[in-house]
Structures are given as C-alpha cells and as structure tokens.
Amino acid sequence: MNGRRTWSIRVRMTLMAAAITAVICVVVSVLITTGVRGRAADYKRERATEAALEVVALLKRERLPRTLRPRGVSALQVIDPQGRVLADSGGLGDRPVASFQPPPDRVYDQRLLCPPTGLDGCMNVIAFRVYEPDGDWTVYVADRAIPWYVSGPLCVFLISIGLLVTLLVSLRTWRTVDQTLAPVDAIRAELTEITATKSGRRVPVPETRDEIRLLAEAANATLDRLDAALERQRRFTSDASHDLRSPITAARAQLEEALLYPDDVDWPQTGRSVLQSLDRLQAIVTDLLELARLDAEAWTGEESVDLAALASIELARADRSKRIVTHVQENVTVRGDRLKLVRLFTNLLDNAERHADSRIDITVRAEGDTAVLEVADDGVGVSPGDREMVFQRFARLREGRERDANGTGLGLPIARQIAEAHGGGLTIEDSPRGARFVLSIPRNNGADH
Image 1: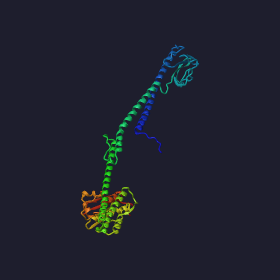
Image 2: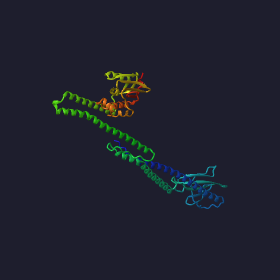
Image 3: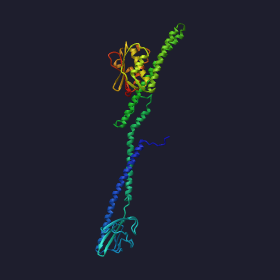
Image 4: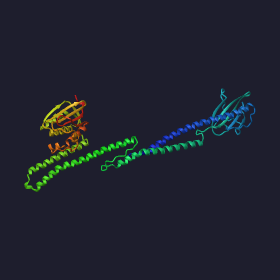
C-alpha cells in the first residue's frame, strides 16, 4: 500500500509560490542588509577619521588635553613614542587599547578587535601615525563594529515585509489557481453525472482560449464518440433481438400449429421448416459471436498470409453457382490472422454469389506498400448512397432480402471489421456493372521475395 501523502494542486501551487517568494525575499533582504551595512560602515569610518583628525590637530598645536571628547565614537587614545598613554576619552586605563601600528609606508591602519584592551565587545580600531620631532605618536580611535544584521529594527522590518509579501503572494496564488481549476471542477462534476442512462450531456466549455478549453473540447469529443458507440450498441441490440426473434417465432408458430392439428400436419415438412429456422438462428448466433470476438480483438495468431494462395485455396474448396474469373498476382503477402482473412474473403465471395447474374471477378495485386483484393460481381450493384449502409450491422437492402431471405446482415460488417483489425479498409468502389468490393491491407514486404 502506498502511504505517500498527496496534496491538491491548489496546495502544491500555493506552497511552491510561497517558497519561491520566501527565497526571493531572503535574497532581497540579504542584499539590502549588505548594502545598508556597507553604508553604515563607511559612515562610521568617516566619523572615526574625523575624530582622529581633530585629535591630531590638537596634538600639532600642542593643545592636547588629558581627557578627550569622543565626538560620536566609543573611545579615543593618544600614545607617545615611548608607549605611554598621554590622553584618552576616559575609563581606558594606562594601557593602549591596541598593540598594532600602521605600516611604515602608511599613515593609518584599521583592524577588528574582539575586544580591544579596556573595552567590551568587538570594535573597529583605527590607528593614526603622527610625525613629531621626538618620534612617532599614535592616535587610536575605537568604535562599535556593525553586526551582520546591522540593527534590530531593520531586521524586524525586513522580516515583516518578507512575511507580508509571502502571505499576499500565497493568497493571490490560491485565488488564481482556484479560479483556473473552477472549470476543471465543473467538468469533473458533469462527468460524474454522465452514465449510460444519462448520455447526451456535455461538459461546460470555458470561454478562455487555454489548455482547459482544449480539455473540455476533447472530453466532449470523447463523449460524442461514446454516445455514438452507445447508440450503435442499442441499435445493434435491437436489431439482434429482432433477427433472433424472427426464426424463433416462426419455429414456435409452426410447432404450435402442428400440435393443434397433429393428424393434418405433414411432420417431415414441418421438421424441415423448423430446421430451416434453426439454421438461420444458428447463423445469426455464429455471426454475433464472431463480432464479439472481433470487438474484443481475440486474435488466434499472426502469420504471413499470401492473398493469392488464400483465394485459390478457398475457391477450390467448393463449387460455386457463378463463374469465377481470377486475376491474381503472386507473392502479395500480408501479416495477420489467416482464419479471419479467410472469413473476410468467403463473406465477400458469398455476398457476390448472391447478387451476381453470372460472373464474379477476383483480383489480387500489389499497389506499392498496399495489398489489394477485389471481389466484383455483374449484378445490379449498390447505389453510392447505400455503400456505407451495407456495412452497418443487420442492415440489408431490399434487393438483398429478395435474393436471400435467410441472410443475417452481418457478413459485410464482419468483413470490414476484420479489414480494420489488420490496419486496412474495405470499401465499395465504382465499376461498370455490379458491385466491386476493394480490400486494402498493408503489405508484408519483408516476406515478398
């Protein structure tokens, strides 16, 4: 059992948008904090430099007091050439706050000390070199180091703005996804209401030109095909019931009449009549079972079949009442079920024999990558308007019923379905006289040698 938890699209899209927004807010906050920290560091450095220069000016004028005023910095200290503290901002003791000196080639140097001597916390300490006749003096300026977050209020402000933006984006994403999926919910609700007894309904198509509209149109197209299939099934069931009922009713009526007047009945003739009705019933059931197998694609096997050899063998099995003329090309092979192709050919041949006046032409030829088998008769033919109707199940033209009252109306539909199962087609084409059935199936070129 799969215990993995699934989230709805709304939740997933909202969480994704919130995560992306949060990452962007963090990056922007880091950039803002870095920029503000840099500006603050520059400002502190300038302020420390100004305080140090004021002390240097007092030292040069020999007006240096013992206690210095910090002027915006944390600490000031003046060291003579002997390392003694001569002036400071108070509370620093007698020791220098730092031990480093500017390099010989520079006037000042800056370092981060955690902490400087006599002070607490990390501070930026700037050391200035002052040239005097008695030696080099040093002025130290110490100021608090700026933390990575710059200041608490700035950090709170950025966090608050980030959370607010993330919340607004999440709400907007949820609303947008909800509006986008509303047509999908409507389609799903409509589909759940559609059943075999409530067909004919269609899902709503949104006005927007997007993928959801394409989905709705595809769903409606599928429903159109399903309704057409259901209608064919209903018609097929109705026709099958009628055709099955006819021989049963005929046989029952004959038997009931014979039982009412047993002494006046020709029992051998009655038996032959009933047997004829049973033969028709058996033919209908056999064709129905064949159609069911074709609908289920119940193949018995696939092999290479030579159409010319198949036609010759089937023509030699039994005598026909009409003259058969063949025009066959050798080595026209296809891949498929031999028994089904035999059934297709015999159905076409039986149909032609029922409608031909005196002659049936059988043609087998290759047209490029297509194998063609034609069965043509010299009968009255099929009008262009009826050429598709004869392939409908149980459909029989008036002329066909007159020639063979026991026909099932399933032979040609079975033949076409076998052709389509082999990737081909079966149609009725124009001919000078009679009907010309043309079967087209992809050739098995690998076996044509």
